[in-house]
Amino acid sequence: MTRFESDIKTVPHSASKVYEVLSNFDNFESLLPSDKIQNWESFGDRCRFEVTGIGQIGLKIVDKEPEKTIKYTADGTVPFNFFLWVQLKHAEASSKVKVTLDADLNPMIKMVAKGPLEKFVGLLADAIASHSY
Image 1 (cartoon, helix red, strand yellow):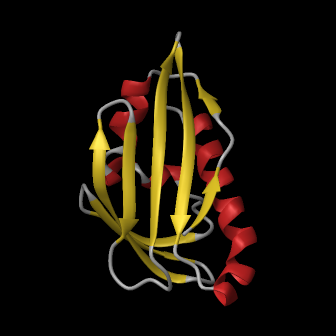
Image 2 (cartoon, helix red, strand yellow; image 1 turned 90 degrees about the horizontal axis):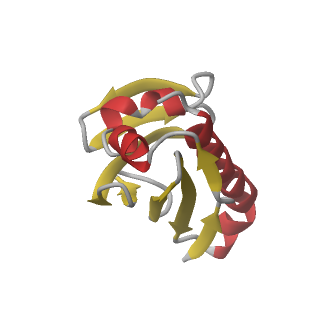
């Protein structure tokens, strides 16, 4: 597995509020860039959408610990297996967040996907940190 980690971001909201949004895909669409996402469907602990230039992607929540972590993985056909998780930590009047992606990449896919996946993890962490909860 190849690991991609975001920087730790400060969110000006409680870990419980951030967890409430991230632990249910019904709340998740607003975190994604609307110019790159189409055909969003949410089913609470699962979602499906199309990414411009990539195709259809499905995600499901596989584990969650209130106010601490939410773990996601692929749901359906994807070019590689992966696990994505968001770690939360309560701080005074705010919270800290870190996004990690473990991807099972063969050497050819890794060469092509490394840059976009690093960027994705950083953009997702930024989106979580700047979201209006």
